[in-house]
Amino acid sequence: MTNDQPISGAEGRDTPAKGAAWSLSLLLGINLFNYIDRQVLAAVEPDVRRALLSPLDPNPRGKMGWLSTAFIVTYMLVAPLFGWLAERMSRWWLVAIGVAIWSVASGASGWAGTFTLLLITRCFVGVGEAAYGPVAPTIIADLYPIRQRGLVLSFFYLAIPVGGALGYALGGQVAESSLGWRWAFYLVLPPGLLLAGLCLFMRDVRSKPDAAVPRRKPGIGQYAVLLRTPSYVLDCAGMAAMTFAIGGIGYFMPDYLELRHVAGLGKISPRLLFGVITAVGGLLATIAGGLAGDALRKRFPGSYFLVSAGGLLAGAPLLALMLFTPFPFAWIWLFLCVFCLFFNTGPSNTILANVTHPAIRASAFAINILVIHALGDAISPPVIGHISDWLHRAGHTEVWSMNAAFMLISSTMVIGGLFWFWGARYLEKDTAAAPTRLGE
Image 1 (tube, helix red, strand yellow):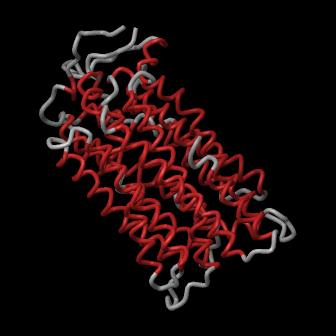
Image 2 (tube, helix red, strand yellow):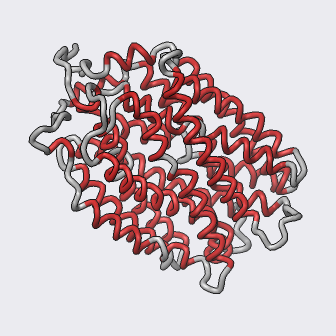
């Protein structure tokens, strides 16, 4: 059953709402520190492993992979709750609460004296990010019209490669300094609390007297419309495959590069160089993907799906080439693979915003978070770690074992690209129906 009363708001607006640029800037800054915090752990993973695990542990990488999983599982399970709350209370207050929680928890990670305590702090980081993750893109979608969302959301998601790279660089440099790896966690606490405080001065666009985006409380049955929206379902499937790939690569690539004893870098750490590649390649790809999706939209109604699929399918063989090409030439393939992985960031998230009714958009993003992480980076680090450890125990070299584990990632990238190609045929119809379709 549908609600045929059209809504106004960003779906009908031709220009951004008042204060949109400032809101986008603040959310971008928060997202930047979000991904710095996420990747600090990956950057210092070898140091943490040596400090908190016994050298006689038979499965050290597999166990370290569970630190990432603890964060992701908490994040994905709690996100739907905060998505539901975002449709019933001030979204900026939820963002402030979330940023404060994850900042304190991240700082506490530096104090952890045992593996178990570190596991607990990473769970609380997940709780904090769950209060922020599904809310921020819905605020942006309400502030900007459909025709600008691809590029605007691409700017917002620039924080993924740039923040991730800064996390690698910060973690790597601090860990190698006299301060030690614990300070990599301490340093993200003050800016996080400052950003949380700024959110308290922001006003939800839905609460303004002339709000174009109405505050509406949907019933439980209305969320079923998401399952009847092919674009939403197929986008989630493609994003899950992409997230599996990024999670596995992001967590173990710094360790893998050191295992291959990358030469010719002088005093430059492979971790640092991987961070630079992630930042530059991811930044260029995120902007390019957003521009391409918006530019092709008039010619190809399914452009956001096509752009996403093309990038992911191109990245699969590039990852394989990197694994079996000697350095320094392998850096070229790694850069291109990173570029392809991030090319879909803006378009794939724009699809989520465009095919969902504003009244359930926060929950739509939250459910997406649950699905893509449950099938993606919640399982890829331990899977990659366990495969690598198992093959190494079977007598293969560590590098050969990691190569074989990474080839699984290449396969999932192909699967994700095919899901996105499939979704292109539905996007125009689902986008047109979104403002007036809400299950009863």
